[in-house]
Image: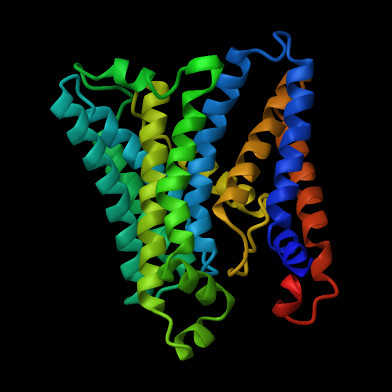
Length: 328
C-alpha cells in the first residue's frame, strides 16, 4: 500500500498534466469543425511533439536546479543545419542526420563546460551561448530556405500517419523517450542528476559523480533540442533563423516543465511529465483557436490556465517542512 502511495506522490505532477491534456484535447476535438479525425489528431500531434522535445531538453537541466535559456536557439540552429544537409542521397541523409544531432549535443556540451568548469550560473551561461548559437543560425540561414536537393520524401515519413491513423510523430517521440530518457533516468548518472538537484553538496559528500551528471544533462539537453530542430525541418521542410521561434520555444518549454510537475528547484519530476505538459500547453492554444478567441487575448488565457494548473500542483508544498515529506 505504501509503495502505491509513494508512486502516486512521485508521479502526481505527471498525472495532473495528463488529466489537463485529456480534458483540453477532448474539448478541442469536440468543437473542431472536422471532429475527431486522423488528420486533426495528426496535426495536433506534430505541433505538440515539437514542443515536447524542447520541453524534454529543458527538463534535463531543471532536474539539476538550473534553467537552460539556449534550448530554443539550439532548436533553431539545428533546424538551419538540417535544412542544408538533409540531401536526397542516402549517404547525404544519414550524414545530415548525424551532423545535426552532433551540433545539438556539442552546443549542450559547451553549456556544460561553462557551467561546470567556468562556474557560471546556468541562466547566465545559456543566455550568452544562446546569443552565439542564434548568430550561427543567422549566418547559416540569413533568409528562410532549403537545399536544392533536399530530401523531402524522407521528411514526410516522420510527419504523416502510420497504420490505423497513428501519427508517426508520436511513434518517433516514444522512440526518443525509450532510447534517451528511459536509460538515462535509470542510470547512475540519472540518479546522480536527481541528487544534484535535491542538494548538490549532499550529492558530492555522498560520492555521487556530480560533474559527470551535470555534464551529461547538458549534453542530452542539447541533443534533445537538436532532435526538436531536426523534427521542425521534417515538418516545415525549410530552415529559418527565427528569433521568435527561439524565444517562444524557450519560454514555452519552461511552462511545459512546470505544468508537467517538474520542480524548478530541481530533484523532482520527469521528462514524461514535461511531455504531457507540452501537449497540454499546445492543446490550450488549439482550444482558444477553435473558439475564435482574439489572438491578442490568447496569451492572457494561456497564462491564466497555466497559473491555475501550477497553483493546484504546488498547493501541497504549503505545509511541507522538508523535502522528504514530498514522498512520505
